[in-house]
Image (cartoon, rainbow, N blue to C red; front, side, top):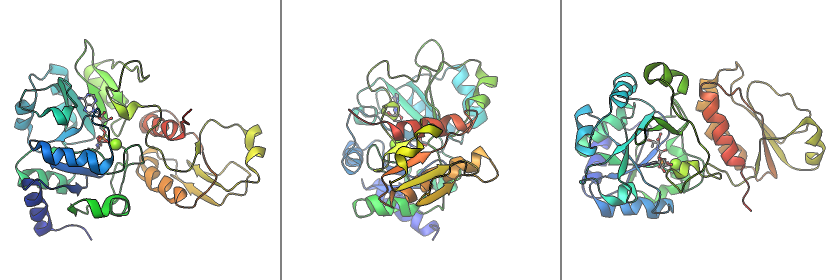
Length: 320
Ligand code: TXA
Ligand code: MG
């Protein structure tokens, strides 16, 4: 059931008291704490089993709150804010001293976004503080796009789960850093680059892990289910899967002739928005079947397709 005003009030009180609330955003569900309460923020890391070197995003609901968190706002960042906030865009900027180190993993920078979900905005306003919040999943697993996903994995560890229905976007926010000379994409996400570049020009895009964990969402293995995911397969490889329990994650139609245990079509009408919104729930359904493999069909790498393929590749990365 969608959370009502009373429940949002209760959630805000829990946050003010140092508790942890899972909350809906338009991208994925977040696991929230009062950003200025380091003990509460520490609990987020514990619950997620998240390494302390992985900084959190701050969620705000009022444009004026940004200048309380960051040193300055470059003109290009400001343009993006005016155009896309509230929305699936996170900006990395130089932080003010007041932002606790545990939020930023000791980095001199902080990631901030204004989510576009009425419950998230209402919660932040009622709590009266920025909410530090990663996606509400165990570290490294697929992000939750329904309150049920959060309940299944973290239910007994959070103080309250707000329900805002299924997330409209279904992919985490696009992260752009304004720290270097040029704006740089740290994570492709719910806001396609094609919408960003007409406003601020070319965005640098070296997503390769060239330097430490400045954004673990960029670790080669991340966003992964238990079941091995295979993305780079060819028609000729299919014989290897014939005697296995295999699920198919397909974009708009089934082009493969294996007997699949289950097929998930992301968007029969071939719409990348719809595919993005369905992606994580479909991966979870397949993951629940204890299959040997999930075969994923590629989607066109334009617009949201870029972020979808990014998540599929990271989900498919095998260690060792
Ligand atoms: O859509 C979203 O962004 C969701 C919703 C809940 O807002 N949040 C989310 O948070 O995906 P999380 O923690 O799962 O991913 C945030 C990513 C991490 O990869 C983290 O390393 C990166 O943002 N990040 C946070 N602060 C950063 C910073 N100061 N510099 C570089 N990367 C940063
Ligand atoms: Mg995450």
